Length: 318
Image (cartoon, rainbow, N blue to C red; front, side):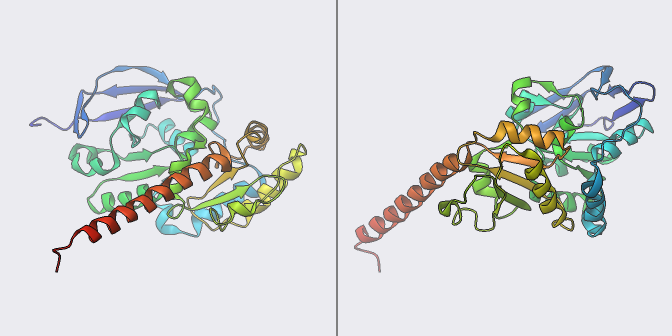
């Protein structure tokens, strides 16, 4: 650019969690075009006016979270909780928020003041080395973030991953700009995403249907069955018990599904009341996932068939 590296200052005033963002004009050349950020003003990044930042879950879940990260020091150094981020702002630490989702998703809703930079492109922005970076996505997928952040650290970037991503940010009263209705569905994971990522992410998949479906076992061989009924207290108790068994697993998310998603609204309410934050839902349930899986299988069969036909037609091949 031939100019002094632009910088971003995020400062939090103690009395009201009022964040003042000072941006110099930042031009970021990306594969999709140029992102231009130029603004100044006061923005409140939380919907909560209280002065303490105590958002931790209670009981075993809170203790489990601390143990989870203490057992994996390598990953612990890469994580920053929403609470720690807000506390850092109160102490006037300077940080840059990097949203690595696609530009379409970013345009739909986003954390005010965050920059939209594809994960693979961060390493090409040397001016981002000047401040600590907090990278995040939706909050259910960590594998790509972990791998890339470790590479960025070797390149002298100061980078951390926001624990729980956008979903946990919203759950803990963080402010978001954009489409409110779209925000309400950020805890839903599309079947195609589950299909592509289930082998690579640290997920516990939970079947909440009243009876186990033998058809689901080939699709989710390691699933756990916790049937949901109107007695939500029993379900929450079983869910917390399951979580306590996975205390040593870093970057863990729990993916719930039923037959077609009809029970999700009740379950979401029970989970929210229990202050459990890292739970997501398979969009459309098992029915939608089976349909997508079938389409992919048919495509694979068609692809193999085309290969066979091509080989048979090649009469001159040695």
